[in-house]
Amino acid sequence: MNTSKVWYVTGASQGLGLTLIKKLLDSGYRVAATSRDAHTLSHAVGLIDSDRFLPLAVDLTNEDCIDESIRQTLAAFGRIDVVVNNAGYGMAGTVEEITEQEIRNIFNVNVFATVNVVKRVLPVMRSQLSGYIINVGSVAGFVGAPGWSVYSATKAAVAAFSEVIALDVKGFGIKVTVVEPSGFRTGFLTESSLAIITSKIEGYEAVKNTQDRYLSANGQQPGNPGRAAEIFMELTESQDPPMHLFLGNDAYNRASGKLTDMAAELEQWKATTIGADFK
Image 1 (cartoon, rainbow, N blue to C red):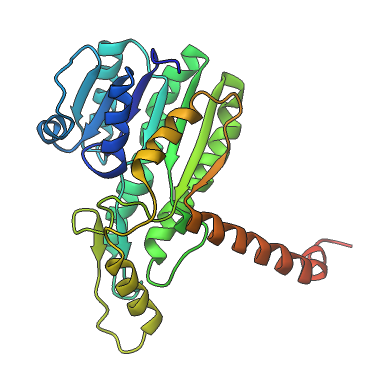
Image 2: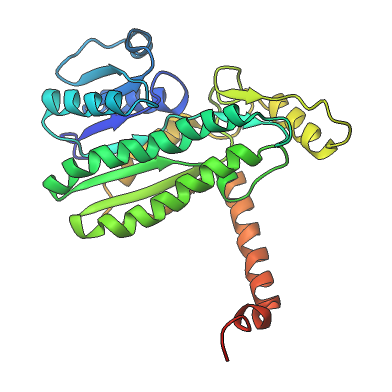
């Protein structure tokens, strides 16, 4: 592997992000990593090596903070080869009971932070005529589950954004992948990473049952974050990385099932679809 590459990883103080930067540093890469608290991040990583590790305190909802973190990364390492937009959190509840502010908050972190990081790193990668952007989505952005409507909307937005950005920047030698995992054994289903709005409305049994099932799976998710981190590293060595990469057996089953259903529905309604054009 080319360990001279410089990585910039958001949401790095816990979960998949923390696992990834530890693997990167163990492999000899140079890493700039963001968290709301740089001291907590440094403590979690347990490495003091300013030549290879730059912990950054960044409020990803603040564009000036993102700008400054990119500037500091360039000052420390001179370039940015790989960006991983990993920061984000989950939200479960009925759309009736999630407030507008709560919806805006999760879009600010899951969507707008991703867009703004990409927006500010693209001039760097264009000047290099190289770069790789990995945006962390979710299988929920393609195949939703009851009670996850707002979260799924944020991850669907990340996937759509990634698809078009990939087309926009291909001519500059920049590659883009949206990674869409199912359940991985991280802290995603804990209070620090998941906002749960308990339904007080009678009914909505599918939502309530799904919430209970997901929460009871905490600590038992089949996805291996260490293996996911290794896959991220392997992707950067590929000459032709995938646009979409679903991770986990559950992600594969859910995505393939939906694709089959969509293909059948598309054919069933083909006459109506093509009949919408002028004759």
